[in-house]
Length: 264
Picture 1 (cartoon, helix red, strand yellow):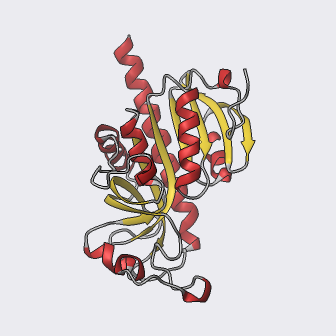
Picture 2: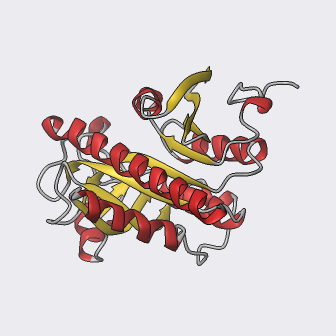
């Protein structure tokens, strides 16, 4: 069988994968895969690094998608085609906080997302179609965070197509900003509307999950406090990422255990 084009993996190695964890940074896949039993890297092409492993004999895949919607859409399309028995997909990302409660070091659990990702309109052009995760998975992740005493916040995520202009950053080339207020003053604009965090992929992730009836959920480590500073708070970056990974891995262990109990 030919390898899947962009992921450059053999479909036979992933066809029985039941859960998929995805993230933007290829390096983060290594950290996630380290939590699995018998982890094996089976692909490393462009921004897409792929691992497989198990937890309680359940096959779990880990694949990176790079920055933004286009790479994510390619990864999901090819993963969905090659993993026909998927139970769900969880994204482990990073974000900037938009509320006082969304402080660096915490994790953000997305309840829905604003569709400014730039890619989802080419999948579902109707802008009124909402970007929402699987409600049960999201609620269970919140419960897991509380059980593990992992500091978290949940709410609306703003997903943008660009990092500088789309997120209202003033330190891009020549300080350029478009005139539209939701970009020029993005932090104030979206925080006033009650959004809790900002990143670049969740809305497309939720759109594709809903369209193809594959449950999705998104957990992001908060590495910047956009209300007070546009910079990443480096001393909290590892804390936030490790907390997000721990939350997702403990959630999946519990989910797999519950599934085994229900089967028996």
